Image 1 (tube, rainbow, N blue to C red):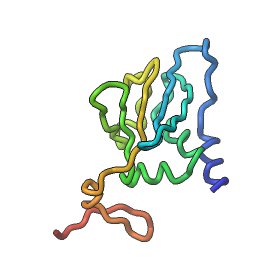
Image 2 (cartoon, rainbow, N blue to C red):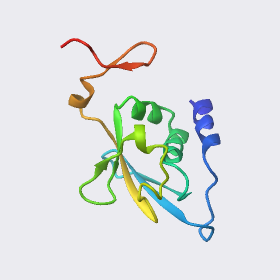
Image 3 (cartoon, rainbow, N blue to C red):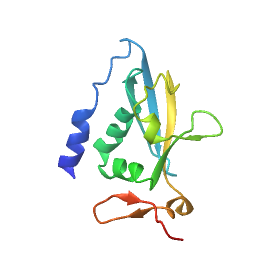
Length: 131
């Protein structure tokens, strides 16, 4: 686990100084608990940096996000908006309008949303062709 977290840590961009350039501060709520993590990024960093940040704390998080077992929700405004990782993870915080700050929530995907996916032993997620 420590080695996997280290890989994510090495991908992280440096934390920008508060007075250096245009920054965004992300506050990420961890599930339905009252636990938050906060980190500052440059606005030209991509959402992938936030995923790497979560992976640096637990290497399970990125895999669960990509497998759509968990989701990131932008809860900066009401109602919250589920982030589409397939399109949004390569977009900048500026393009995603997550500046000067944003609040995201990491939460499990409802079971109903997972029913149309199967996981193979190799970790590949496929949609069933039968009903």
